[in-house]
Image (cartoon, rainbow, N blue to C red; front, side, top):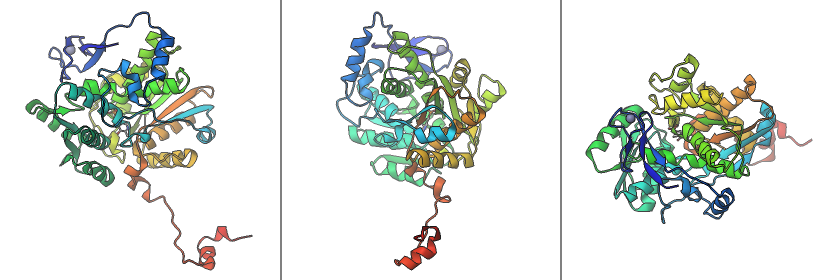
Length: 409
Ligand SMILES: *Cc1c(COP(=O)(O)O)cnc(C)c1O
Ligand SMILES: [Zn+2]
């Protein structure tokens, strides 16, 4: 199914497949439009996918670029049945999609791979991004692997782990005094002046397509079936809406059957423009100034907010938010019941999942998939206070004094 054009999401005006992201008629966002598929041989298509590489490129038929012959190949991350978390939450069938298991430990490897492949096709030699942290990691690493120059723009107050894990790749790391929305505004300006591929600005239509692979993998890993419900985090809303788009594309051609899952979005109270609009019954989001430990989700003016709202409402879902303390508890709950240590964004997702279960929103018979999008080692401050260490001398007596409950019977 080759990509046909870029198309305005609002007025449907079509544009060539180059580095552009905004409609000249109505200023709406552009997305990739594909030619319609007819008479799909579902069996043959499934076999072709299964014979592909264990990466996002097994779904190249549904992506706007040819698979690159070099670089870090993300995707095909584990989908794990979470029996102990099911018991804790009173659910029947819960799966965790662990996207921390990507080359730079977040789902951003998916979107960057697709954007960078398209940037190379278009002849760009410099890759750049406006990042809340994980995108910086991914752009720096993928540019290094491909031998391209890179510039990475981040808010100056980012977690140290994310700054170090980006700088190591030899990128030019620029810390902007301001929040993500300031960084994004600067990058939008720069993208008009320099011949650079900003993966999430002028390459955004291609970038966004990468997130569909999360849906494709989930369906394939469930044996060509769909979940009944999805819980996923929202920053700009791109990931959330593109997971649904991936399921829709496969429903349309009959690769899977049934209907679109109920879509539940997750935000932090300290940056919850989409959750607030959902609660208020609004169709658009009022921008906010972020203040939360979930820095990777701290986008105060989410580009895909209206589409996320529409999607949650259309599928009978919700968009909820949780406090920083609930986020910390969510990180621990997931770690203690699944052995998966996630960053603050995964704490947001887990805490919202727990909230939905407690509220009785989830029918016990449902098959639920929660998307864990990043790695806990990148946000260690979030759990520092809750970790207890007993320091002792190297003697049995000191051990028994220091850890009394461990005294032998
Ligand atoms: C970027 C990011 C998201 C979601 O981003 P969107 O802008 O909504 O696509 C979710 N989780 C993590 C860990 C991220 O880094
Ligand atoms: Zn338009």
